[in-house]
Amino acid sequence: MKHNSMFMRVFLVVLIFGCGLFTSGCSEKPESADLVLTNGKIVTVEEDQPEVEALAVRGDIIIALGSTARIKQYIGDATQVIDIEGRLAIPGIIDSHAHFSGIGEARLSLDLMKVNSWENIVAMVAEAAQKAKPGEFITGRGWHQEKWDRVPEPNVSGLPYHTELSRVSPDNPVILRHASGHSSIANAKAMKLADITGDTPDPAGGEIVRDGQGNAIGVFRETAQGLLRGAYYEYRRTPEEMKAEQRKIVELAVEECLSKGITSLHDAGVSFEAVDYFKKMADDGVLRMRLNLMISAGNAQLNQRIADYKILGYGGSRITVRSIKRLIDGALGAHGAWLLEPYDSLPSSTGLNTYPVEDLRETAAIAIENGFQLCVHAIGDRGNRETLDVYEETFKAHPDKTDLRWRIEHSQHLHPADIPRFGQMGVIAAMQGIHCTSDAPWVFKRLGEKRAEEGAYVWRKLMASGALICNGTDAPVEDVDPIPSFYASVSRKTKDGSIFFPDQRMTRMEALKSYTINAAYASFEENLKGSLKVGKLADITILDKDIMTIDIDDIPTTKVLTTIVGGKVEYQK
Image (cartoon, rainbow, N blue to C red; front, side, top):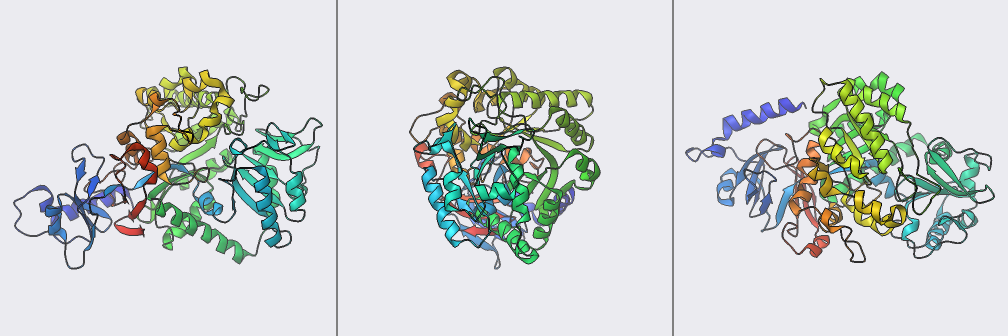
């Protein structure tokens, strides 16, 4: 549905039935609503009406907000009424950077997020190998060597050899992805299937980690992971099994997001084929939430197909496509973030440039000429600088193009000289609050204290420059749950109780806006969602605690009670 046609429909509804919205002189009772919320603390994120007790919804649109007494006139025989009982309702939460299919896939593989040692990971793989079919791949995600309680032996820069993994699973190939998704560990079987030998060269933008004798230890950084994918994708089930798994992945991702209060998600990198599939899922009613999809495809493909894939509000505003995704570097934890100076913990390296800058310039030209937003993953200070340089060149070459809202995904470590450029150029910093506190224990190891203080997760400095920050989780890198990320944004408190540069904390309202109206703005949808207002979509999240007023350290105990998408209750605890 086109946005303008939706708002014309809303205007007519209000014109015909909604005199009670604007005057107190209408004697005739307005037409009944389909859904009414009453007796709540409803934070709208709208300055002219910041808080109300109740609201009414007809179809998928909010038609009235106000006191419980006033909104009761919209209750009819068929109206669904939810008494919030004084609890907090907020605009539907928007995760502005995550990987939707990855959320579902993570539910189908080994969860290594909370495993505290390499030995325990090996034990999990051994158990999985005993249950696996011959030749079946064993996959997992979530390991992080900095979170293990001891360094594995033997190791290269803290990374384990594949030896034990290969011993417990000699016949089943194993690929275990790092929490960041920017490196993987593979066993001997997987490497053999991928034809990886000691002579296999490092690909551009990637590294096969080797020991002092030049032997591959089984760890693959950044683009080198692609060497393993061919073998994995050649192992396929029947077409029917593959189709069933694909649908299951979507169902699991939807279920996970709705249970965490997520009504919309910006999917940071999908293929053209994935767009087509998500449209089908929307048509089939499986996609019970909203997706903003960023296209990830080569420049040649973009030139051929991008003009046909600008999609605004497909399937009742379930799918929007108007962005292109690129990665200029890797992750800080995997020593893949591209730095101006070497890592403190790996002086031989300044990280990896995973996508050529010249090719990024071409992508930028394609994006601006086709009216697409460009979203570039940049974590290291050099990755961010190179991206800002490309943006600046492109903007100057197209002075007639305005309101571009180009984004840098993560913006985790910046050189002080580059921080003001975000506000000056209107570049959106698409950051993840939870990354700050999750990464903090080892950021000093990677960058040293001076660089960390100057430019690591500098939310206040960016906002002071005039930049807009939208929030998210990068799930499945982190749990898609927005509550820990909100807490990290307002506290910057790590697990050991220390606070990572407290002067960079957000206020609670700033954090809420980063997850609602800012995120909607970052996808050009601020007139459609992101706040609770007459004429906007009725996307609402109800919480069991008031995260705006409770003790700050009680925020992580907050749970989602109800998730409403387009006026329909899609999750209830």
